[in-house]
Every structure is written in structure tokens, then in C-alpha cells.
Length: 279
Image (cartoon, rainbow, N blue to C red; front, side, top):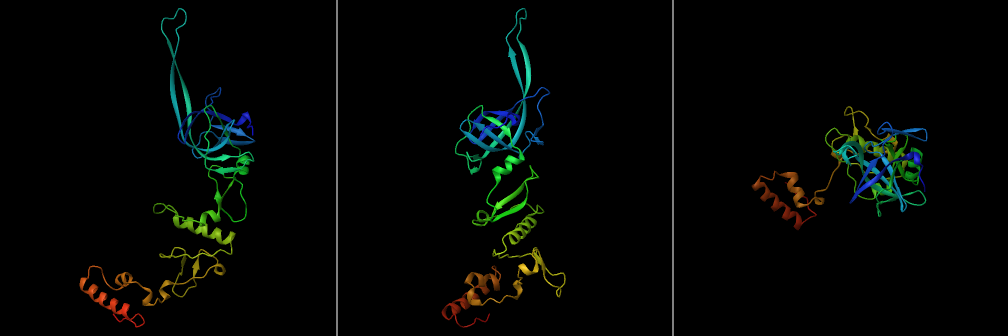
């Protein structure tokens, strides 16, 4: 697929591993910071923005991870009547790109990069309309969690099967919004996938609470979509606990004498598990 010349902003000049370096094409008035494409004003070289790299072998979707500018000096050969070489300086603006996915002949994204572009491959801005076409997925089971920061008009969606089909961690420092992110994600799951089954262990009362002991239970989910169970109301039979769990439950680890006594009781328990243990 040929891309319009109006979206061209630079060319690839250096390739090292997964690191691609592009130099921006200068204009008459210098380097442009914005470009109007399909009646849409798009930034050039902004961190986090997506670009499309094109050569004869295919297309690649890449992300801008670094932007820099260098001053280059060149020496010109001496002219007739001028004994010394002339030195001129020019500016060069570069972008460091990371390849994200390949764009196949049908205009769909294929995860991973199996073939990197060649030198002098063209770098193009992507309009929101084309980017939406590239990012489109099956609507069934897709979770819309917000908007793309670089393109606020485009929704950000996650595949629920891929998201919950493996381990997931939400990491961040205190106050970064981990609890809010999890609440928003679970609320979206309940709304989009009403037949899903979720078990939430709330150790600190962040996702459900009572304003007073007699007040009705409140939480992040509507009352008709979730059931609340207070852990203090649970009764667990002792024979479900292991010896280590009994030790942690009844004694301090520094108390050697009580540890010996508990070991004695634990041995009685193992010998006659059906009888209760009185400690």
C-alpha cells in the first residue's frame, strides 16, 4: 500500500538491533512541529506517538521513544581565489523508534517484528482514521478501558481472553492509582462481561466498606452484581490448617517453649485428626 507524500516526515538512516534512527526532513522554515493530515493536526516527533515505516518489503508500526537534535559541521572544498576551506553548520533532528508490529497486506496488525526495514525507508505520520483501522479487533469480549493518550479520539481496548488468560500485575508507587485502576478495570469487566466470575480478596477494605457497623454494605459494584462476605464471619476447621499455619496462628516464632508444646499437640493431631485439639 502506497502512503501519501503529504504524510512523509523522514527516512531511516541507522538500524541497530531493534533500534531504528530516523532523520526528519527539513522544511523551508526549519523543522516542523506539527503537520496537518486529513484535516487533523498531528505532532511530529512527540514521545509516545506512532508512525508508519514503509519500504518495498512491507510496512511497520513503530513508536517514538526519543527525540534529539544535532548540529553538524561540514567543510567545503576551497573555491578559486579562496585559499581556505569554508565550514558550514546545519541542524539535524532525529527520532529513535521502536518497532511494535508489522502491517500485513490486508491492513491488519501482526504482533511482533520479524523483518526490519532497510536503510532509507520512509517514515510517515498516521492519521487517526488509519490508526483506528489498524487497531480494530473483534468486538466480542473487548474491554474499553479509556482513550489513547496520543489520540484522545480513539478508544483503548483490551482483549479480555488474553488479559485474564495469564498472570496480571498492576504495579506502581504509593498514590499512583493502583486501586483506582483495578476498580475501573473490574467495573468495566462487570459491565461488558456480566456472566464473568470474579473473586476479589479485599484485605484493606478498599473496594467495599460500611460507613457504620449497622449501615448497609457499599462497594465499587452495584448491589445486584456482587455479594459481600466478611472474613471475620468465616469459620475454618482446624484440620484444614497445616502445622506451619498453626504455629503462625497461635504462637510467636521467638517463643521456643510454646513451640515445643505446639509440636506435641500437632503430633497428637496427626495421630488422631478426627479429635479436636485444645490449646
